[in-house]
Amino acid sequence: MNNRLVINYTPGPTMLHRLTGFTKVFLFIAMTVAIIATYDIRILIPLFLINLAEMISMKPNYKPIVIMFAITFVTVTLLGNVMLFLVSPDVGFNNIGVTNMLWQGSGRLYLTKEFLWYCLVIFVKRTASFASVMAFALATTPSEFASGLNKVGLPYKVCTIVSLAYRTIPDIANDFINIRNSMMMRGVELSKKASLWKRLKNTVLILVPLIFTAFGKVGNIANAMDLRGYGKHRKRTWYAEHETSKWDTIIRILAVILLAAAVYYIIRYRIIDPWPARIWCPWADPNEIVSVNQIDTVFFMKWFKK
Image: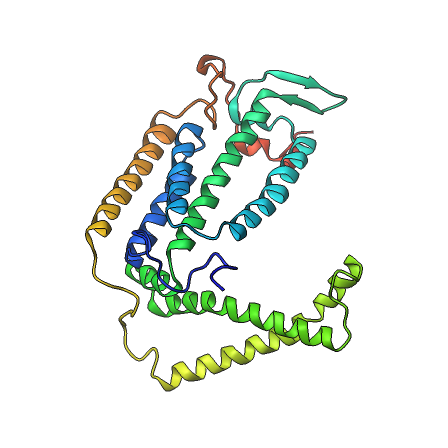
C-alpha cells in the first residue's frame, strides 16, 4: 500500500524519517507560514527547492506524486488561469499596479505581461505548498503525526481521530477494490469495455456498501477503544514518539529561524514598509505603481459601482 499511496505507515530509513513527530509537525507549520506569508517569487523559489530536496532525499515512489501534481496542474493551474483570463484579465494590474499590453482582443479581453507574471507567481506558490505537503506526508506516519499534534498543544483525542482517519484510508481503498470486483463478478460492467458514463453510473453503486462497511469498522474501533479504557486520563503517551536526536535539535532551530523570518517579513514588509503593490515584479517601478484596493477588485463589487 505504501507504493500506491503517498502516506507512509512504517518509518523510513532516512534522516527525515527518523525525526520525532513534533519536529516534523513544527517544521511543516513553519514552512507553511513562510509560504503563505509572501507572494515574492524570490522567496518562494528557495522554499520550493528546499521542499523538493527533502522529497528527493527520501527516495519516494514518484508515480502517485506525479499523478497528483498533473491532476492539480490541469484542473487548478491551466483551467483556473483560462477562467481567470476570461473573467478578470486585469488581475495582473490589480496585484502589481502597472500594465504592459501584449495583446488586445475584442471587448474586455486583453493579455498583459503582468497577468502572465501573476499566473507564474501563483503557480510557484501552489507548487511550493504542494511540495511541502508531499515532503511532510512522505516523512510522517499517522502515529507520528498524531503525537506531533499533541506536542504542539492539540487534545490527544483530536489527535487520535486524525491518526485513525489516516489509517482508515488503505482499508477503504481495499474495501473499494473488493466491492468493485464482487460487482463485476455479478455482471456489473466497470471495465474499459463500457462507456465512460456507464462506468461512472455503476461506480456510484459502490458507494452505498462502501459507506456501510466503513461505518461498521468505525463501530468496531469505537467499541474496542471503550473496552480498553480510552479517554480515562487527561494525558497519554505515544508509542511512535521517541527521544530527540541531534538532528531534531538542528531542524527545530532551523524551523524557529524560518518562522521568525516569516514573522519579521510580515511585520516589516507587509505592515511597516510594504511594497506598493501586492506582488513584487522585476520590471515594475515603485514610483509608477498604482495602488489598488483588493476588496474593490472582487468581481461582484463592480456591480455596486454601476
